[in-house]
Image (cartoon, rainbow over all chains, first blue to last red; front, side):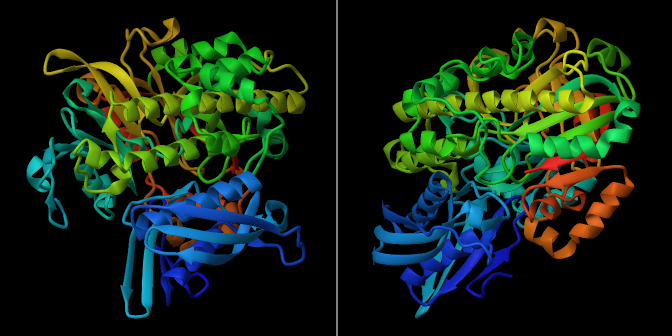
Amino acid sequence: MGNGNYELLDHTADVAILVRAKSLEELFVNTASAMFEIVADPHLDKQGQRVTASVAQSASGREELLVNWLNELLFLSASQEAVFRDFKIIGLDGSSLRAEAFGLPFSSCEMHIEIKAATFHELSISEEGEAWQAKVVFDV
Amino acid sequence: MTEGEIELQKIDDCRWRLPKSAKPGMRVPGIIYANEKLLKDILQDKAVEQVANVAFLPGIVTASLAMPDIHWGYGFPIGGVAATDPARGGVISPGGVGFDINCGIRLLRTNLSFDDIKERQEELVYALFSGVPSGIGSKGDIRISAREEKELLVKGAGWAVSRGWGIEEDLEYTEEHGAIQGADPDMVSERAYTRGKAQSGTLGSGNHFIEVQVIDQLYDSWACDELELDLGQVTIMIHSGSRGLGYQVCEDYVRQMLSCSQKYNINVPDRQLACAPVDSPEGKAYLAAMRCAANYAWANRQCLMHLVRLVFEKVFRTSWQKLGISLIYDVAHNIAKIEKHEVNGELKRLCVHRKGATRAFAPGHPDLPEKYKLIGQPVIIPGDMGRNSYLLTGTEKAMQETFGTTCHGAGRVKSRSAAMRSIDREILLKELESKGIIVKASGRGTLVEEAPQAYKDVNDVVDVVHRAGISKRVCRMRPVGVIKG
Protein backbone atom coordinates (compact mmCIF):
# COMPACT_ATOMS: atom_id res chain seq x y z
CA MET A 1 0.00 0.00 0.00
CA GLY A 2 1.15 3.57 -0.54
CA ASN A 3 2.99 5.47 -3.26
CA GLY A 4 5.95 3.10 -3.42
CA ASN A 5 8.01 5.16 -1.00
CA TYR A 6 6.11 4.00 2.04
CA GLU A 7 4.03 1.15 3.40
CA LEU A 8 1.38 1.04 6.09
CA LEU A 9 2.32 -1.14 9.06
CA ASP A 10 -0.25 -2.79 11.27
CA HIS A 11 -0.95 -0.85 14.45
CA THR A 12 -4.14 -1.60 16.37
CA ALA A 13 -5.41 1.89 17.13
CA ASP A 14 -3.35 4.26 15.08
CA VAL A 15 -1.49 4.49 11.78
CA ALA A 16 2.13 3.40 11.49
CA ILE A 17 4.23 3.86 8.35
CA LEU A 18 7.60 2.68 7.10
CA VAL A 19 9.14 5.15 4.67
CA ARG A 20 12.10 4.61 2.35
CA ALA A 21 14.41 7.12 0.64
CA LYS A 22 17.86 7.60 -0.79
CA SER A 23 18.88 10.48 1.45
CA LEU A 24 17.86 12.16 4.69
CA GLU A 25 16.33 15.06 2.73
CA GLU A 26 14.29 12.67 0.62
CA LEU A 27 13.26 10.77 3.76
CA PHE A 28 11.80 13.95 5.27
CA VAL A 29 9.98 14.72 2.01
CA ASN A 30 8.65 11.17 1.54
CA THR A 31 7.41 10.95 5.14
CA ALA A 32 5.51 14.22 4.79
CA SER A 33 4.06 13.09 1.44
CA ALA A 34 2.96 9.78 2.96
CA MET A 35 1.31 11.56 5.90
CA PHE A 36 -0.77 13.80 3.64
CA GLU A 37 -1.65 10.90 1.32
CA ILE A 38 -3.25 9.24 4.36
CA VAL A 39 -5.14 12.45 5.16
CA ALA A 40 -6.53 13.27 1.70
CA ASP A 41 -6.44 12.92 -2.08
CA PRO A 42 -6.60 15.94 -4.38
CA HIS A 43 -9.71 16.21 -6.56
CA LEU A 44 -8.26 15.91 -10.05
CA ASP A 45 -11.02 18.02 -11.55
CA LYS A 46 -10.94 20.75 -8.94
CA GLN A 47 -7.75 22.75 -8.55
CA GLY A 48 -7.81 25.58 -6.03
CA GLN A 49 -5.41 28.36 -5.18
CA ARG A 50 -2.00 26.88 -4.36
CA VAL A 51 -1.03 27.32 -0.69
CA THR A 52 2.60 27.86 0.35
CA ALA A 53 4.08 27.61 3.85
CA SER A 54 7.56 28.00 5.29
CA VAL A 55 8.87 25.70 7.98
CA ALA A 56 11.85 26.22 10.30
CA GLN A 57 12.41 23.66 13.03
CA SER A 58 15.15 22.61 15.40
CA ALA A 59 15.54 19.61 17.70
CA SER A 60 18.07 17.67 19.73
CA GLY A 61 18.38 14.92 17.12
CA ARG A 62 17.17 13.88 13.67
CA GLU A 63 14.33 11.67 14.96
CA GLU A 64 12.92 14.46 17.11
CA LEU A 65 13.41 16.77 14.13
CA LEU A 66 11.32 14.46 11.95
CA VAL A 67 8.44 14.49 14.47
CA ASN A 68 8.68 18.27 14.82
CA TRP A 69 8.61 18.67 11.02
CA LEU A 70 5.53 16.48 10.66
CA ASN A 71 3.71 18.12 13.56
CA GLU A 72 4.52 21.59 12.24
CA LEU A 73 3.03 20.58 8.88
CA LEU A 74 -0.10 19.28 10.64
CA PHE A 75 -0.40 22.58 12.48
CA LEU A 76 0.02 24.54 9.22
CA SER A 77 -2.45 22.23 7.50
CA ALA A 78 -5.08 22.87 10.18
CA SER A 79 -4.48 26.60 10.45
CA GLN A 80 -4.24 27.24 6.68
CA GLU A 81 -6.92 24.65 5.87
CA ALA A 82 -4.68 23.06 3.27
CA VAL A 83 -3.30 19.66 2.36
CA PHE A 84 0.38 19.83 1.42
CA ARG A 85 1.60 17.81 -1.56
CA ASP A 86 5.08 19.07 -2.46
CA PHE A 87 8.03 19.91 -0.27
CA LYS A 88 11.32 21.67 -0.86
CA ILE A 89 14.07 21.21 1.68
CA ILE A 90 16.21 24.34 1.81
CA GLY A 91 18.53 23.25 4.59
CA LEU A 92 18.72 20.12 6.75
CA ASP A 93 21.25 18.80 9.23
CA GLY A 94 20.87 16.51 12.24
CA SER A 95 19.28 19.21 14.39
CA SER A 96 17.69 21.87 12.19
CA LEU A 97 15.52 22.15 9.13
CA ARG A 98 14.30 24.84 6.78
CA ALA A 99 11.79 23.96 4.13
CA GLU A 100 8.83 25.06 2.06
CA ALA A 101 5.58 23.21 1.62
CA PHE A 102 3.10 23.59 -1.22
CA GLY A 103 -0.47 22.38 -1.17
CA LEU A 104 -4.12 22.73 -2.03
CA PRO A 105 -7.02 24.01 0.05
CA PHE A 106 -9.23 21.43 1.82
CA SER A 107 -12.00 22.30 -0.65
CA SER A 108 -9.87 20.94 -3.51
CA CYS A 109 -9.30 17.59 -1.79
CA GLU A 110 -11.20 14.49 -0.83
CA MET A 111 -10.57 14.14 2.88
CA HIS A 112 -10.06 10.68 4.39
CA ILE A 113 -9.05 10.83 8.01
CA GLU A 114 -7.67 13.35 10.46
CA ILE A 115 -4.15 12.81 11.80
CA LYS A 116 -3.90 14.41 15.23
CA ALA A 117 -0.13 14.15 15.60
CA ALA A 118 3.09 12.30 14.83
CA THR A 119 4.28 10.54 18.00
CA PHE A 120 7.63 9.45 19.44
CA HIS A 121 6.35 5.92 19.99
CA GLU A 122 8.58 3.41 18.12
CA LEU A 123 10.02 6.29 16.13
CA SER A 124 13.18 5.38 14.22
CA ILE A 125 15.43 6.56 11.42
CA SER A 126 18.05 4.18 10.04
CA GLU A 127 20.50 4.29 7.16
CA GLU A 128 22.51 1.71 5.32
CA GLY A 129 24.61 3.28 2.61
CA GLU A 130 22.13 5.14 0.43
CA ALA A 131 19.10 3.33 1.82
CA TRP A 132 17.29 5.41 4.42
CA GLN A 133 14.28 4.26 6.38
CA ALA A 134 11.95 5.88 8.92
CA LYS A 135 9.18 4.46 11.05
CA VAL A 136 6.52 6.81 12.43
CA VAL A 137 3.33 6.16 14.41
CA PHE A 138 0.56 8.73 14.01
CA ASP A 139 -2.33 9.36 16.39
CA VAL A 140 -5.51 9.33 14.32
CA MET B 1 -0.10 -16.84 29.57
CA THR B 2 2.78 -15.07 27.89
CA GLU B 3 3.41 -12.24 25.46
CA GLY B 4 6.91 -12.79 24.11
CA GLU B 5 9.07 -12.76 27.21
CA ILE B 6 6.42 -11.28 29.49
CA GLU B 7 4.56 -13.68 31.74
CA LEU B 8 1.11 -12.87 33.08
CA GLN B 9 -0.15 -14.49 36.28
CA LYS B 10 -3.84 -15.30 36.55
CA ILE B 11 -5.39 -13.78 39.68
CA ASP B 12 -8.98 -14.83 38.88
CA ASP B 13 -11.30 -15.06 35.85
CA CYS B 14 -11.21 -11.27 35.36
CA ARG B 15 -7.76 -10.20 36.54
CA TRP B 16 -4.18 -10.86 35.44
CA ARG B 17 -1.00 -9.69 37.13
CA LEU B 18 2.05 -8.50 35.25
CA PRO B 19 4.76 -8.94 37.90
CA LYS B 20 7.23 -6.16 38.66
CA SER B 21 9.99 -8.50 37.54
CA ALA B 22 8.54 -8.59 33.97
CA LYS B 23 10.68 -5.62 32.90
CA PRO B 24 13.55 -4.19 34.95
CA GLY B 25 12.64 -0.66 35.99
CA MET B 26 8.96 -1.28 36.75
CA ARG B 27 8.12 0.39 40.06
CA VAL B 28 4.81 -1.41 40.56
CA PRO B 29 3.19 -4.49 38.99
CA GLY B 30 0.60 -4.28 36.22
CA ILE B 31 -2.99 -5.48 36.62
CA ILE B 32 -4.99 -6.27 33.48
CA TYR B 33 -8.76 -6.77 33.66
CA ALA B 34 -9.70 -9.38 31.06
CA ASN B 35 -11.14 -12.82 30.53
CA GLU B 36 -9.27 -15.55 28.62
CA LYS B 37 -10.99 -14.64 25.34
CA LEU B 38 -10.13 -10.94 25.52
CA LEU B 39 -6.62 -11.69 26.72
CA LYS B 40 -5.90 -13.58 23.51
CA ASP B 41 -6.62 -10.38 21.55
CA ILE B 42 -4.71 -8.26 24.03
CA LEU B 43 -1.62 -10.43 23.58
CA GLN B 44 -1.70 -9.91 19.80
CA ASP B 45 -0.12 -6.47 19.97
CA LYS B 46 2.20 -4.47 22.23
CA ALA B 47 -0.38 -3.32 24.79
CA VAL B 48 1.03 -5.47 27.61
CA GLU B 49 4.51 -4.05 27.05
CA GLN B 50 2.97 -0.59 27.32
CA VAL B 51 1.38 -1.56 30.67
CA ALA B 52 4.93 -2.43 31.80
CA ASN B 53 6.31 0.86 30.45
CA VAL B 54 3.72 2.91 32.37
CA ALA B 55 4.88 1.16 35.57
CA PHE B 56 8.22 3.03 35.15
CA LEU B 57 6.59 6.41 35.90
CA PRO B 58 8.07 8.00 39.03
CA GLY B 59 5.67 8.10 41.97
CA ILE B 60 3.21 5.58 40.47
CA VAL B 61 1.16 3.90 43.22
CA THR B 62 -0.41 0.43 43.56
CA ALA B 63 -0.24 -0.76 39.93
CA SER B 64 -0.22 0.14 36.26
CA LEU B 65 -3.82 -0.75 35.43
CA ALA B 66 -5.41 -1.84 32.17
CA MET B 67 -9.11 -2.11 31.44
CA PRO B 68 -10.49 -4.99 29.28
CA ASP B 69 -10.73 -2.76 26.20
CA ILE B 70 -6.96 -2.20 26.37
CA HIS B 71 -5.10 -2.04 23.07
CA TRP B 72 -1.83 -0.78 21.67
CA GLY B 73 -1.59 2.99 21.68
CA TYR B 74 1.46 5.28 21.82
CA GLY B 75 3.12 5.74 25.23
CA PHE B 76 0.25 4.60 27.43
CA PRO B 77 -1.89 1.73 26.16
CA ILE B 78 -5.43 2.80 25.32
CA GLY B 79 -7.41 1.58 28.31
CA GLY B 80 -4.50 2.38 30.64
CA VAL B 81 -4.88 3.90 34.11
CA ALA B 82 -2.08 5.17 36.35
CA ALA B 83 -2.17 7.16 39.58
CA THR B 84 0.93 8.95 40.81
CA ASP B 85 1.57 10.47 44.23
CA PRO B 86 2.86 14.07 43.91
CA ALA B 87 4.12 13.93 47.49
CA ARG B 88 6.50 11.17 46.44
CA GLY B 89 7.78 12.68 43.21
CA GLY B 90 4.74 11.56 41.24
CA VAL B 91 4.72 12.74 37.64
CA ILE B 92 2.18 13.86 35.11
CA SER B 93 2.60 12.71 31.51
CA PRO B 94 0.79 14.32 28.56
CA GLY B 95 1.14 10.89 26.88
CA GLY B 96 -1.04 9.50 29.68
CA VAL B 97 -3.87 11.73 28.50
CA GLY B 98 -3.23 11.75 24.76
CA PHE B 99 -3.65 14.28 21.98
CA ASP B 100 -7.44 14.33 22.12
CA ILE B 101 -7.68 15.75 25.64
CA ASN B 102 -11.09 15.01 27.21
CA CYS B 103 -12.23 12.93 24.33
CA GLY B 104 -15.42 11.84 26.01
CA ILE B 105 -19.02 10.87 25.67
CA ARG B 106 -22.44 12.09 26.66
CA LEU B 107 -25.71 10.20 26.72
CA LEU B 108 -29.09 11.87 26.23
CA ARG B 109 -32.50 10.46 27.01
CA THR B 110 -35.64 11.30 25.04
CA ASN B 111 -39.29 10.52 25.66
CA LEU B 112 -39.50 9.01 22.16
CA SER B 113 -39.87 5.30 21.59
CA PHE B 114 -38.60 3.33 18.61
CA ASP B 115 -42.13 3.35 17.18
CA ASP B 116 -42.00 7.15 17.08
CA ILE B 117 -38.85 7.22 14.96
CA LYS B 118 -38.90 4.06 12.86
CA GLU B 119 -40.66 5.69 9.90
CA ARG B 120 -38.26 8.64 10.01
CA GLN B 121 -35.00 6.89 10.78
CA GLU B 122 -33.37 7.85 7.49
CA GLU B 123 -34.64 11.42 7.60
CA LEU B 124 -33.28 11.77 11.13
CA VAL B 125 -29.80 10.46 10.25
CA TYR B 126 -29.55 12.72 7.19
CA ALA B 127 -30.80 15.70 9.21
CA LEU B 128 -28.17 15.02 11.89
CA PHE B 129 -25.50 14.69 9.21
CA SER B 130 -26.37 18.03 7.67
CA GLY B 131 -27.10 19.76 11.00
CA VAL B 132 -23.84 18.84 12.77
CA PRO B 133 -20.51 19.78 11.14
CA SER B 134 -18.27 16.72 10.96
CA GLY B 135 -15.07 15.50 9.33
CA ILE B 136 -11.59 16.98 8.96
CA GLY B 137 -11.43 20.71 8.60
CA SER B 138 -15.09 21.08 9.45
CA LYS B 139 -16.01 24.42 10.93
CA GLY B 140 -18.89 25.39 13.15
CA ASP B 141 -21.06 28.47 13.08
CA ILE B 142 -19.65 29.61 16.39
CA ARG B 143 -17.35 32.61 15.95
CA ILE B 144 -15.87 34.14 19.07
CA SER B 145 -13.35 36.82 19.96
CA ALA B 146 -9.98 36.04 21.55
CA ARG B 147 -11.28 37.29 24.90
CA GLU B 148 -14.34 35.10 24.71
CA GLU B 149 -12.20 32.11 23.72
CA LYS B 150 -10.31 32.50 27.01
CA GLU B 151 -13.62 32.63 28.85
CA LEU B 152 -14.67 29.41 27.11
CA LEU B 153 -11.48 27.67 28.28
CA VAL B 154 -12.26 28.55 31.89
CA LYS B 155 -16.03 28.10 31.91
CA GLY B 156 -16.27 25.04 29.63
CA ALA B 157 -19.82 23.82 29.04
CA GLY B 158 -21.08 26.68 31.25
CA TRP B 159 -19.89 29.12 28.58
CA ALA B 160 -22.11 27.40 26.00
CA VAL B 161 -25.08 27.43 28.40
CA SER B 162 -24.55 31.16 29.06
CA ARG B 163 -24.88 31.69 25.29
CA GLY B 164 -28.23 29.89 25.33
CA TRP B 165 -26.91 26.57 24.02
CA GLY B 166 -28.34 24.42 26.78
CA ILE B 167 -29.67 24.83 30.27
CA GLU B 168 -28.18 24.88 33.77
CA GLU B 169 -29.45 21.35 34.37
CA ASP B 170 -27.09 20.11 31.61
CA LEU B 171 -24.13 21.23 33.73
CA GLU B 172 -25.40 19.35 36.78
CA TYR B 173 -25.08 16.11 34.79
CA THR B 174 -21.63 16.74 33.32
CA GLU B 175 -18.44 15.52 35.00
CA GLU B 176 -16.87 18.50 36.84
CA HIS B 177 -20.04 20.49 35.98
CA GLY B 178 -18.50 20.84 32.54
CA ALA B 179 -15.59 22.97 33.75
CA ILE B 180 -12.63 21.63 35.69
CA GLN B 181 -11.13 24.18 38.07
CA GLY B 182 -7.55 25.40 37.66
CA ALA B 183 -7.64 26.04 33.91
CA ASP B 184 -5.26 28.85 32.98
CA PRO B 185 -5.69 30.15 29.41
CA ASP B 186 -2.26 31.83 29.60
CA MET B 187 -0.70 28.36 29.62
CA VAL B 188 -2.24 27.62 26.19
CA SER B 189 -0.06 28.63 23.23
CA GLU B 190 -1.19 30.95 20.45
CA ARG B 191 -0.69 28.00 18.12
CA ALA B 192 -3.24 25.96 20.09
CA TYR B 193 -5.75 28.83 19.91
CA THR B 194 -5.17 29.09 16.17
CA ARG B 195 -5.63 25.36 15.66
CA GLY B 196 -8.85 25.20 17.68
CA LYS B 197 -10.40 28.27 16.08
CA ALA B 198 -13.86 27.82 14.60
CA GLN B 199 -14.02 24.17 15.70
CA SER B 200 -16.43 24.55 18.64
CA GLY B 201 -19.58 22.64 17.83
CA THR B 202 -17.89 20.30 15.37
CA LEU B 203 -17.75 16.55 15.71
CA GLY B 204 -14.30 15.82 14.30
CA SER B 205 -13.11 12.74 12.45
CA GLY B 206 -12.04 9.13 13.10
CA ASN B 207 -13.97 7.37 15.85
CA HIS B 208 -16.09 10.39 16.77
CA PHE B 209 -19.80 9.96 16.22
CA ILE B 210 -23.39 10.74 17.06
CA GLU B 211 -25.59 7.71 17.46
CA VAL B 212 -29.34 7.32 17.85
CA GLN B 213 -30.10 4.23 19.89
CA VAL B 214 -32.92 2.21 21.38
CA ILE B 215 -32.77 0.55 24.81
CA ASP B 216 -33.09 -3.20 24.22
CA GLN B 217 -32.19 -4.72 27.58
CA LEU B 218 -32.59 -3.67 31.21
CA TYR B 219 -30.30 -5.19 33.85
CA ASP B 220 -30.98 -3.03 36.90
CA SER B 221 -34.59 -1.90 36.96
CA TRP B 222 -34.16 0.18 40.11
CA ALA B 223 -31.30 2.17 38.53
CA CYS B 224 -33.29 2.44 35.28
CA ASP B 225 -36.23 3.90 37.23
CA GLU B 226 -33.92 6.42 38.89
CA LEU B 227 -32.50 7.30 35.47
CA GLU B 228 -36.00 7.43 33.88
CA LEU B 229 -35.11 4.78 31.31
CA ASP B 230 -37.19 1.95 29.91
CA LEU B 231 -37.22 -0.68 27.16
CA GLY B 232 -37.74 0.69 23.64
CA GLN B 233 -36.83 4.24 24.67
CA VAL B 234 -34.68 6.29 22.28
CA THR B 235 -31.32 7.57 23.54
CA ILE B 236 -28.64 9.65 21.80
CA MET B 237 -24.89 9.31 22.27
CA ILE B 238 -22.35 12.03 21.38
CA HIS B 239 -18.63 11.16 21.21
CA SER B 240 -16.14 13.95 20.58
CA GLY B 241 -13.19 15.76 22.12
CA SER B 242 -11.12 18.93 22.20
CA ARG B 243 -10.37 19.01 18.47
CA GLY B 244 -7.27 20.89 17.25
CA LEU B 245 -6.82 22.88 20.44
CA GLY B 246 -6.31 19.72 22.50
CA TYR B 247 -3.93 18.16 19.96
CA GLN B 248 -1.75 21.26 20.01
CA VAL B 249 -1.72 21.51 23.83
CA CYS B 250 -0.51 17.90 24.00
CA GLU B 251 2.13 18.43 21.32
CA ASP B 252 3.42 21.65 22.91
CA TYR B 253 3.85 20.00 26.30
CA VAL B 254 5.27 16.67 25.08
CA ARG B 255 7.92 18.75 23.31
CA GLN B 256 8.59 20.73 26.47
CA MET B 257 8.70 17.68 28.71
CA LEU B 258 11.24 15.84 26.56
CA SER B 259 13.84 18.03 28.24
CA CYS B 260 12.45 17.28 31.71
CA SER B 261 13.81 13.74 31.80
CA GLN B 262 17.35 15.09 32.21
CA LYS B 263 16.34 17.93 34.52
CA TYR B 264 14.45 15.68 36.92
CA ASN B 265 16.46 12.52 36.28
CA ILE B 266 13.47 10.60 34.94
CA ASN B 267 13.98 7.37 33.03
CA VAL B 268 11.06 6.06 30.96
CA PRO B 269 11.34 3.50 28.14
CA ASP B 270 9.25 5.42 25.57
CA ARG B 271 9.74 9.11 24.72
CA GLN B 272 5.99 9.46 24.32
CA LEU B 273 5.83 8.93 28.11
CA ALA B 274 7.78 12.18 28.62
CA CYS B 275 6.70 13.61 31.97
CA ALA B 276 7.47 16.03 34.79
CA PRO B 277 6.70 16.02 38.52
CA VAL B 278 3.06 17.07 39.05
CA ASP B 279 4.10 19.91 41.35
CA SER B 280 7.00 21.16 39.16
CA PRO B 281 6.58 24.34 37.07
CA GLU B 282 6.33 22.19 33.91
CA GLY B 283 3.81 19.80 35.50
CA LYS B 284 1.65 22.67 36.80
CA ALA B 285 1.74 24.45 33.44
CA TYR B 286 0.65 21.31 31.57
CA LEU B 287 -2.14 20.61 34.06
CA ALA B 288 -3.42 24.20 33.69
CA ALA B 289 -3.34 23.97 29.87
CA MET B 290 -4.79 20.44 29.80
CA ARG B 291 -7.71 21.68 31.92
CA CYS B 292 -8.35 24.41 29.34
CA ALA B 293 -8.50 21.77 26.60
CA ALA B 294 -10.76 19.60 28.78
CA ASN B 295 -13.11 22.55 29.24
CA TYR B 296 -13.02 23.21 25.49
CA ALA B 297 -14.16 19.61 24.94
CA TRP B 298 -17.02 19.97 27.42
CA ALA B 299 -18.08 23.18 25.70
CA ASN B 300 -17.85 21.38 22.37
CA ARG B 301 -20.05 18.47 23.46
CA GLN B 302 -22.51 20.95 24.96
CA CYS B 303 -22.67 22.77 21.59
CA LEU B 304 -23.07 19.44 19.78
CA MET B 305 -25.94 18.50 22.10
CA HIS B 306 -27.58 21.83 21.31
CA LEU B 307 -27.29 21.13 17.57
CA VAL B 308 -28.75 17.64 18.10
CA ARG B 309 -31.69 19.14 20.00
CA LEU B 310 -32.29 21.56 17.11
CA VAL B 311 -32.23 18.72 14.56
CA PHE B 312 -34.77 16.70 16.57
CA GLU B 313 -36.97 19.81 16.86
CA LYS B 314 -36.87 20.23 13.08
CA VAL B 315 -37.58 16.58 12.28
CA PHE B 316 -40.34 16.10 14.86
CA ARG B 317 -41.70 19.66 14.57
CA THR B 318 -41.88 20.24 18.31
CA SER B 319 -39.62 21.66 21.00
CA TRP B 320 -36.76 19.59 22.44
CA GLN B 321 -38.32 20.10 25.87
CA LYS B 322 -41.48 18.35 24.67
CA LEU B 323 -39.31 15.60 23.21
CA GLY B 324 -37.74 15.22 26.66
CA ILE B 325 -34.16 15.49 25.35
CA SER B 326 -32.17 15.73 28.57
CA LEU B 327 -28.66 14.83 29.58
CA ILE B 328 -28.11 11.61 31.53
CA TYR B 329 -24.38 12.19 31.96
CA ASP B 330 -21.17 13.30 30.25
CA VAL B 331 -17.82 11.67 31.08
CA ALA B 332 -14.22 12.17 29.94
CA HIS B 333 -12.16 9.30 28.50
CA ASN B 334 -8.77 10.98 28.17
CA ILE B 335 -7.82 13.07 31.17
CA ALA B 336 -5.52 13.47 34.18
CA LYS B 337 -7.16 14.62 37.40
CA ILE B 338 -6.10 15.38 40.93
CA GLU B 339 -8.31 13.20 43.12
CA LYS B 340 -8.30 11.78 46.63
CA HIS B 341 -8.09 8.01 46.96
CA GLU B 342 -7.25 5.60 49.73
CA VAL B 343 -3.94 3.80 49.30
CA ASN B 344 -3.03 1.20 51.96
CA GLY B 345 -5.53 2.73 54.38
CA GLU B 346 -4.23 6.27 53.88
CA LEU B 347 -6.16 9.00 52.03
CA LYS B 348 -3.84 10.42 49.38
CA ARG B 349 -3.88 13.25 46.84
CA LEU B 350 -3.14 11.52 43.57
CA CYS B 351 -2.82 12.43 39.91
CA VAL B 352 -5.01 9.87 38.12
CA HIS B 353 -4.30 9.42 34.39
CA ARG B 354 -7.16 7.87 32.44
CA LYS B 355 -6.13 7.16 28.85
CA GLY B 356 -9.13 5.59 27.19
CA ALA B 357 -10.76 4.86 30.54
CA THR B 358 -13.80 6.23 32.34
CA ARG B 359 -14.28 7.58 35.83
CA ALA B 360 -16.72 5.32 37.70
CA PHE B 361 -17.33 6.80 41.14
CA ALA B 362 -19.33 4.84 43.71
CA PRO B 363 -22.71 5.73 45.21
CA GLY B 364 -22.38 8.46 47.83
CA HIS B 365 -19.30 10.09 46.32
CA PRO B 366 -19.39 13.85 47.01
CA ASP B 367 -18.59 14.70 43.36
CA LEU B 368 -21.82 13.10 42.10
CA PRO B 369 -25.05 15.01 41.44
CA GLU B 370 -27.71 14.58 44.11
CA LYS B 371 -29.83 12.46 41.77
CA TYR B 372 -27.06 9.86 41.39
CA LYS B 373 -25.92 9.73 45.01
CA LEU B 374 -27.77 6.43 45.54
CA ILE B 375 -27.09 4.63 42.27
CA GLY B 376 -23.52 5.80 41.65
CA GLN B 377 -22.01 7.64 38.69
CA PRO B 378 -23.46 6.78 35.28
CA VAL B 379 -20.76 5.31 33.03
CA ILE B 380 -21.36 5.40 29.29
CA ILE B 381 -19.76 2.67 27.18
CA PRO B 382 -20.11 2.99 23.42
CA GLY B 383 -19.75 -0.16 21.36
CA ASP B 384 -19.02 -0.20 17.67
CA MET B 385 -21.60 1.04 15.17
CA GLY B 386 -23.01 -2.45 14.55
CA ARG B 387 -23.33 -3.74 18.08
CA ASN B 388 -24.55 -2.59 21.48
CA SER B 389 -23.63 0.23 23.79
CA TYR B 390 -24.08 0.17 27.56
CA LEU B 391 -24.96 2.31 30.49
CA LEU B 392 -23.22 1.23 33.70
CA THR B 393 -22.78 2.71 37.17
CA GLY B 394 -19.69 3.14 39.34
CA THR B 395 -19.06 0.96 42.38
CA GLU B 396 -17.22 0.91 45.69
CA LYS B 397 -15.01 -1.84 44.31
CA ALA B 398 -13.80 0.55 41.60
CA MET B 399 -12.88 3.03 44.35
CA GLN B 400 -10.88 0.31 46.11
CA GLU B 401 -9.18 -1.25 43.08
CA THR B 402 -9.00 1.13 40.11
CA PHE B 403 -9.06 4.66 41.55
CA GLY B 404 -12.75 4.79 40.61
CA THR B 405 -12.21 3.80 36.97
CA THR B 406 -13.64 1.38 34.43
CA CYS B 407 -13.46 0.67 30.67
CA HIS B 408 -14.36 3.19 27.95
CA GLY B 409 -15.57 1.19 24.96
CA ALA B 410 -15.11 -1.91 22.89
CA GLY B 411 -11.42 -1.42 22.10
CA ARG B 412 -9.92 -1.98 18.70
CA VAL B 413 -8.72 -5.40 17.68
CA LYS B 414 -7.95 -4.86 14.02
CA SER B 415 -5.67 -2.15 12.64
CA ARG B 416 -7.12 0.47 10.33
CA SER B 417 -5.01 -0.79 7.44
CA ALA B 418 -6.15 -4.40 8.07
CA ALA B 419 -9.77 -3.16 8.15
CA MET B 420 -9.25 -1.32 4.84
CA ARG B 421 -7.79 -4.48 3.27
CA SER B 422 -10.47 -6.88 4.42
CA ILE B 423 -13.76 -4.96 4.58
CA ASP B 424 -15.84 -3.82 1.61
CA ARG B 425 -17.67 -0.54 2.22
CA GLU B 426 -20.79 -1.44 0.23
CA ILE B 427 -21.16 -4.88 1.83
CA LEU B 428 -20.66 -3.30 5.26
CA LEU B 429 -23.38 -0.70 4.61
CA LYS B 430 -25.78 -3.44 3.48
CA GLU B 431 -25.00 -5.55 6.55
CA LEU B 432 -25.69 -2.60 8.83
CA GLU B 433 -28.88 -1.76 6.95
CA SER B 434 -30.10 -5.34 7.32
CA LYS B 435 -29.71 -4.88 11.09
CA GLY B 436 -31.80 -1.71 10.90
CA ILE B 437 -28.81 0.66 11.26
CA ILE B 438 -28.46 3.66 8.97
CA VAL B 439 -24.98 5.20 8.75
CA LYS B 440 -23.62 8.41 7.19
CA ALA B 441 -19.87 9.14 7.30
CA SER B 442 -17.81 12.18 6.25
CA GLY B 443 -14.38 10.68 5.55
CA ARG B 444 -14.04 8.12 2.74
CA GLY B 445 -12.05 5.72 4.93
CA THR B 446 -13.83 6.32 8.23
CA LEU B 447 -16.68 3.89 7.73
CA VAL B 448 -14.53 0.87 6.90
CA GLU B 449 -11.86 1.69 9.47
CA GLU B 450 -14.53 1.92 12.15
CA ALA B 451 -16.40 -1.24 11.07
CA PRO B 452 -17.66 -3.59 13.80
CA GLN B 453 -15.12 -6.22 12.71
CA ALA B 454 -12.30 -3.84 13.75
CA TYR B 455 -13.50 -3.88 17.36
CA LYS B 456 -13.70 -6.34 20.22
CA ASP B 457 -17.21 -7.34 21.21
CA VAL B 458 -18.28 -4.71 23.74
CA ASN B 459 -20.49 -7.34 25.38
CA ASP B 460 -17.33 -9.23 26.44
CA VAL B 461 -15.67 -6.05 27.71
CA VAL B 462 -18.69 -5.04 29.79
CA ASP B 463 -19.09 -8.58 31.08
CA VAL B 464 -15.57 -8.41 32.56
CA VAL B 465 -16.00 -5.05 34.33
CA HIS B 466 -19.39 -6.16 35.66
CA ARG B 467 -18.11 -9.50 36.93
CA ALA B 468 -14.95 -7.90 38.34
CA GLY B 469 -17.31 -5.54 40.20
CA ILE B 470 -15.64 -2.30 39.03
CA SER B 471 -18.93 -1.18 37.50
CA LYS B 472 -22.47 -2.45 37.27
CA ARG B 473 -24.64 -3.04 34.20
CA VAL B 474 -27.77 -0.84 34.07
CA CYS B 475 -29.08 -1.17 30.51
CA ARG B 476 -28.05 -1.92 26.95
CA MET B 477 -28.76 0.03 23.77
CA ARG B 478 -28.71 -0.96 20.11
CA PRO B 479 -27.85 1.54 17.36
CA VAL B 480 -30.44 2.61 14.77
CA GLY B 481 -28.71 5.62 13.22
CA VAL B 482 -25.08 6.72 13.19
CA ILE B 483 -23.22 9.74 11.86
CA LYS B 484 -19.42 9.49 11.75
CA GLY B 485 -16.79 12.16 11.23
